[in-house]
Length: 401
Image (cartoon, rainbow, N blue to C red; front, side, top):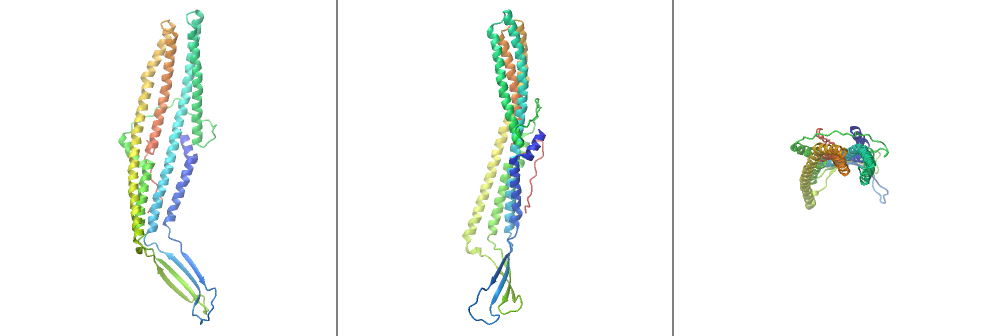
């Protein structure tokens, strides 16, 4: 399964799309941090319709202007872009976690289908022996026709169940190939006797990992950082960034290329419109409070999902242990006893068939419970945000200042 997971992470189109969006978001950070482009302007007299003395007016003027970000607005925009890029990064991680969770669920379903097919073949062989015994007794007159027909009905049920298992197996293979972005008819080989994973991680440890690793929680934290940077930016909007310029002029009668060089500075005057900027600060502060509330909501929802999933794991493991242990042992003992009892003429054929059906149901249920237990653990990893045995993921830092 490790190879399939690696292949899915490398080739899944959804993950590739999320990765491209993350790369695009990172590219916005240096853009936001950059200074405004310098401005170049050129003026030339197109025509003069009055007589003027030489060097009385300029005929050409060339000006270069640059805004100096002394207020630090560009740094605030860079922080916003960096935080929003990390939100996109967490979305990419969510895409990866969902693909891995779905892949493992399909893998366990495929393994379960293979196991179910084995059990179905074993039960078909057992039922064939039962049917032969019934026919032999029917020929000797010690068994009735309904008993023989009942064995044939059970055999038909197994054939029908085989078709259902093959359909489930095909669906699991298709899902795996889709997630790995491979041709849909590519065979996938899994073990028919999957191992039983152990799970003994304390809930307190999982809660810590949940807050440290779950993409939705981390994205909400990053969004809160972005809103705080917007508050900072809104406050810095009160500070004008000066624009300095250098101007070269040529007079109408001058022989030299440049007759005069000047320098200047200009600023905007935000203080004449105080409501505009004060309301912008208020807007940013309200959005920050909303982001903080969203973070609290996301954390509570995550805790609820963790609690419910731990209960699912506990229930699935209980069911598996019960069916694969005590109940399966009892069902097999009951079947062996029924077989001996029927051979000795102490029980009816219907009782033997019933014992055989009970054993079959318990075996298939135990296999399904194992798949449910494995899937529940895989889903827990998607909820927590990382593999349970792996260290918590580190957060990238896209040029955050």
